[in-house]
Length: 473
Image 1: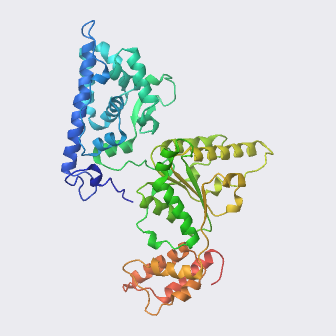
Image 2: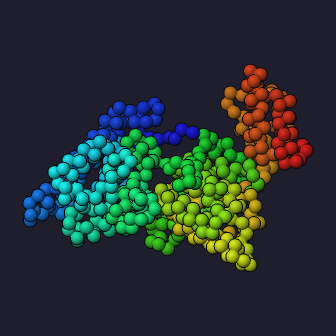
Image 3: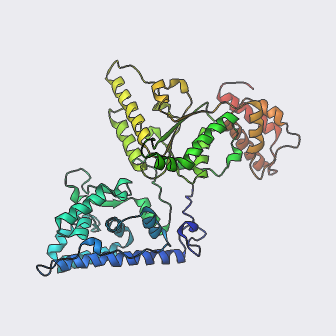
């Protein structure tokens, strides 16, 4: 599925910055590169000043905060990101240092080779990590702190605090301090590489909206839908409860701001009901309505039979999602949220610890976290009380099934002229089952070339859906 990009309007540009393929067009590339070039001119000036500081004894460079960074334009993804995050000068140095191996690796290589030849004592102080396989240079935490503070211990501590304890880039895992050895043998955090997440490198260079790729490091898939709320058929009670969630998404930040810490920032929800009744669809529609990314968690990559591994995987997932304003959707979550048991052996003890840890992280997550289960009776009452909203998605009634049949016909296809939606609604199918019947019938209609669904095909595939559940229509 193609990823939609940030819209040109969000960059406040007077002209479109994207081509038809969704990437930055020539105008967008020029504007974005111009912003980056101004930033790197300032960045290079810091390098030269730090080298100059060591040439003559007694030469002191003014404090870093007096070396003001250049003003940013409003155009382009880099400027938009920096302005939107309200990054201070120290974090702009951190971001530029981490982006440079992706943006201009050859210039970085040329500069470091020159400094090594002209200022060998300074070269060691910059403390870049040189990859033994590619020979490319990568900045470490010491690189950034030396650029910002030189050898001034007081300035060093202030910059270190801004980056590690108050900074947004490290907190939101946009930049991760990674041990280059990958086995933790170097120990000192000063030697750790300032590693920019690949999706943010793509965003700042090409405009692609930053989303992590699915894999072991992030076991969740981005999901979306092309459909609208008009295609969702639910009871009035369920719709009303969903509107309560949407009110939180709309006004939650204002409530949190005014509450001054007296209201929890999280909003954990539980969707429960039979399969195919619209739980996943609803989560996607909420994300689409408010332009928030929805990630469906792959529980097969979270749950582990080894003690402590499930908590570790959950911690990595929530840490990666923190500060991103994502919607986390745990679909078919029975594997994680089964009924808590009494402690009879060590396995029960660890299972309860996993559950407690999950509940804790859900209540700490600043965003919408939705859990979906088919079996609410498996949930412990001590767990259900910690959800802000519990929404039941019941099996559709005959009149609701009629509406689903009417709204689900794909464009380009049509029903037989004498179709009876009243009769179709009597077949006891879920919304997902009706979608399966229509999909299979459309394939047969396309094969015939008339693109008109037939009674024969509809009847046949209704029987197929019943057979899946060992029922007879």
